[in-house]
Image 1 (cartoon, helix red, strand yellow):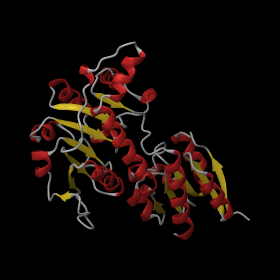
Image 2: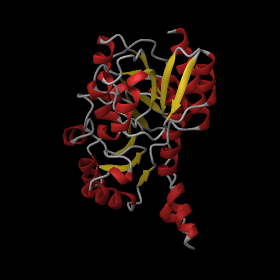
Image 3: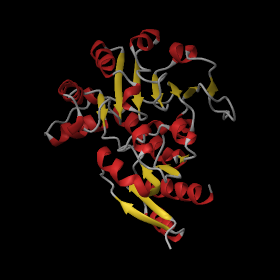
Image 4: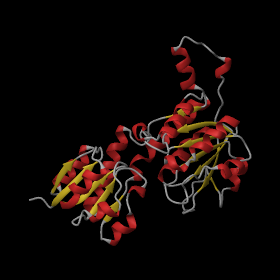
Length: 311
């Protein structure tokens, strides 16, 4: 006998679907469901598994009187009104540990591709161009990176960068615990402003991180620098980023996220800016896939199953 319905509103691995069924749940799978349809569907659901498609706001939560838990595939709980959910006795589970390695690998891959001009020169080869001097690369060794946000993903990236003989500065507003010996923990952003050649953002989206990269941030940076953002699009002010790229203060950008996603939901102004950015030789943009590896899908699903069943 079913112990209740669960709306699956995100791609998941079968380890999660099979595990939920084994635990007695009935699954309703609607990976591409829209907000209005979800409000109608959740009225008899005890659980919801989501990613970034739905906003679990007051309206949707009030439409689900039987809801007992929400499982978030990935990191970033901004899609859920967690305080309101918890006030209604709804448990909220995230799985940031499940895709942290995937995001860290992606950030490193984009950074290496940008610095060594791999994507750029590969595209030129496809056009019949063989340009060596123009594609002379830059090494990571000896450079200083500032990692802003030192949770699961920031730590995963730092572990990988430790092999590159870099100086790794980290700043996290919330934790100074268990810092590895290969990083320098910064009490504030000033050491990063003074020394960093590269900035990599790994922060959640909340009021104090919207447009973290803004005019003031860029002005405070002593060196010209590279930006890596695999967290949330609104962490960077895209207009400011574009201006920085045009002036040369920002030497390059690796972006897996955009202020408005996906392309078919972008305003005309945002789409026009994206079209300009993708044509810059020192910019790499990917479609929010950093944490979406095959392995990450399994690990996030396994993490959620464990938390839901034992929670």
